[in-house]
Length: 322
Image (tube, rainbow, N blue to C red; front, side, top):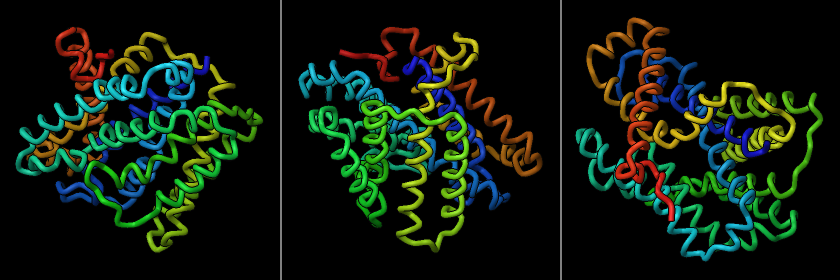
């Protein structure tokens, strides 16, 4: 049941990532467009605080859930598996983006996390550290993991960390990987009535300190702590809830989640650079992003399914394992 409900969370977050990029045109973070909406920018930035953090926490959770296999494999075997799963897709699709969007990117971009693919590079690097310290992460007492998370929460707010090889993102997200391990190893059952208020309060705190940019280091740390609290409650809630969405949809979305994540951004980026699409987005503030979301999600889902059905191309989306 735990792994099934984790699947539901992973699928939901994948869809929210597509929504995040579908709204990107209206934010101050994207270079195109004349229509910039502050509320949309704030919503996207708050959403981004949770999306990637949840993905990383799920990776840590599953790392601990399969601890017997992790501890039984050699370190080189585990890292090589992640190389096929994460690094090879990162290198291939980064190369594709550099070629397609050569006006915005150059070949050095591949060293810094190419556009949204920084996540794959960052996660691969986190897994290297996880396998090297697997006995500590999977066998140590709970208080040592708590101490580790406190240290990592301080590491996450260090300013001006190097961007090469997504080191700055490793600093920011490593805490959530350890949090996922902690939740799986040391379960705590929340009272049903407490889960929603805890998660809602966490979202409010993150939103406030995302909007209040002058909060400084304390505000940054509070955002990390609140996001961690939200994810802790979310992952713990998987022990109490079973959802009832048609299984074939969930299974297909989950199987193609990597492909959807990789491909949807390329589709949306290609679309928003067209003048006719920009005119549509500037004129229709509701219809425009809705179409971007549907085309991005369905297009990426279809292309991913096509790639995965062929044994010679499935490795491009991390399907090949040792």
